[in-house]
Image 1 (cartoon, rainbow, N blue to C red):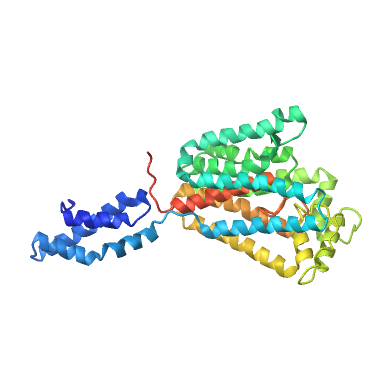
Image 2 (image 1 turned 90 degrees about the horizontal axis):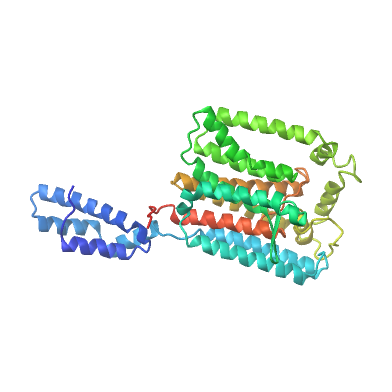
Length: 433
């Protein structure tokens, strides 16, 4: 079908495109509009009208350019997910307020000034990361997927073996005043890289399956080296999500998870203290002064909270790790169950929102990224909440955005930047310069 060579048609199409701010879709819009106009003109000419009359009829039938342009602008609007960014901001603000309240009531190990300055530094870095990502198109990362994977593994090796030999710390890298835990940053980068690797991955042959499993589950060895079981579980669930969405057969993933599950059980049961820690939450009254002390303390604080909390009655030695793993218990005890339930509801809405973005992303690469990151957030949030409610073992796992964990904050904000970037460009064709 030949496009119409007519000044009125060109002017109409250009006026429509001027109202669409996302310039990346202008060519697609022009093609679509011209195609519709061509069809109407052909039908009008077939009915006996002249070409000029047919064009006038077509433009009249298309409607006012300002209405069409405004409508298309809404459809193709390239904007981050402001709702998700607002939820993230609420989490961060809530965490800062909670830590500030701890400081005012002398419930912090350090001075409130030190805490706030460190939080501020990591927050500024996180905001800069989100802004930087917003300037890019997430699809530009795809061709560098293997490079991102290799660099991430390199960072893990450096943090666990090379840098460790310098200062003795495992999994940590210090850059000036900033200390970075590589295991807090690596999962998001690995999801980003594996999404590109798995997008068109061929899971049909045994060799490819073995390579795919090695690439996905292999980095889990770093969590094992750091005896960070919750981190291993969170990462494994995220990778499994990527594999399922990329098209692996259910049989193969069941076999893989069965093998990993067996190794996990052997790892837990080879040390009696791990067994006690894993299952003591089921009957905390059996050993109230030993392995179950944590669970009894958490239960006591929750029960004494009431609807409106105990205010500033919390003492620094009431429960260890109140600024990180058990900050939800502190929030419930201090501000009450009403605030605690609202926070939990907001967490569920946050996870659903990310899932909604993933479901509504047609690009498979973007869908893989969002789904993998959603799995990371969902597992970490839910495990921490369950742990604070005595419904899961007490492991070292913080509450994203709210707990005091600078590196985790940067990693989480990086993930949010990527997710909102996918939302921004999900309906826009990718144009390489």
